[in-house]
Amino acid sequence: MSKGDETKEAILDEALALASRVGFTGLTIGQLAEQTGLSKSGLFAHFKSKEQLQLQTLEHGRQRFIDVTVRPALAVSRGEKRVRELFEGWLRWENEVVPGGCLFITGSIEFDDQPGPMRDALVRNQRDWLDAVATVADAAVSEGDFRADLDPQQFAFELQSLTLGFHHYARLLEDEHAEDRARTAFESMLDRARAR
Amino acid sequence: MSKGDETKEAILDEALALASRVGFTGLTIGQLAEQTGLSKSGLFAHFKSKEQLQLQTLEHGRQRFIDVTVRPALAVSRGEKRVRELFEGWLRWENEVVPGGCLFITGSIEFDDQPGPMRDALVRNQRDWLDAVATVADAAVSEGDFRADLDPQQFAFELQSLTLGFHHYARLLEDEHAEDRARTAFESMLDRARAR
Image (tube, rainbow over all chains, first blue to last red; front, side):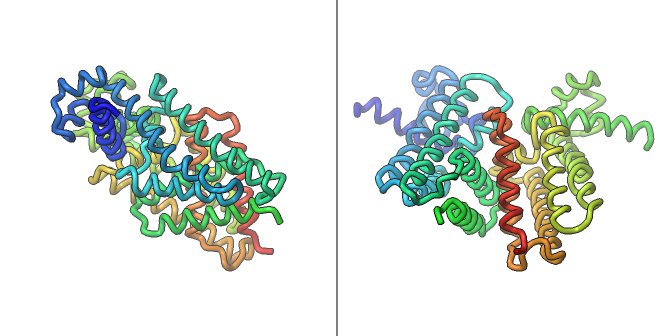
């Protein structure tokens, strides 16, 4: 990595943390300058516009998300084990990587009524994630861990619902049982999915 | 209702529709003036500040939400039937009453990292709703419809997750199967909750 690339990576890490707390709407070049101590003109040279800053931060988040969730899941064997690892990865992402919680969830709400490149990118990311969940669940069917008549897309919907529920309980309600509730619901999903 | 009260109600209906589409952050006296054709100074006399406009719109939403979900549920007999009616009421609220989708969900994301009266009011509303769901599920246990060892709070978490999943699929992904997926997941919840 060149010195310039390293700088850009470090700036995008800060942008990611900021967007996680204040949302993409609050992610401005001015705010990022305050956060990083870099000059607004320097940041403007990197990003050109607020929308470019948002899009590049989202893309940086997507890569970090894949590193934390998809990659470790692919490192374990196919089947229920991999499904579990995907869920554990998502919890790591939400609890440890993004300080204000998943910025894709925040972005989804901010842009669902705003057509444009940010909405398009968010939809693409979410579809990729749901496809990854469905593919991993489907592989658990092929491996004989999950029952043959499992609907992988329905499984992905229910897992997605559960992550949204966890985010809601943990972030808004600050419910100390949020993770227990999510884990209980996940175990129940696995239990229903399992081949008898 | 006095003429003044009627006017205020009509304004709050418009504010509710606006907040549902653009969020509470986008709900300004200026935007509302444009929407209603009323003067900014007239609206300012009603609401005094943007925060008051947000808080009164949220309270108006809370009352409409109760009318659409809790009241019809209380009109049917206790037990599984009432649990179903509560879920149907929520779907009516999301699909028919608020044109841009549930504004409590939008508000939850907008304010989860912003301490203040709006966050407090949102948390109160959500806790009331979750308590209502848990109470109705608990009554279904007493009636013998649901199994004795059902955890009503866990039931509320899972129902909440499901409504968040539905909102996400319907609003961001514009998935035509969103409602089918949510109904399938809800039937599965009932199935697991039922006494054998």
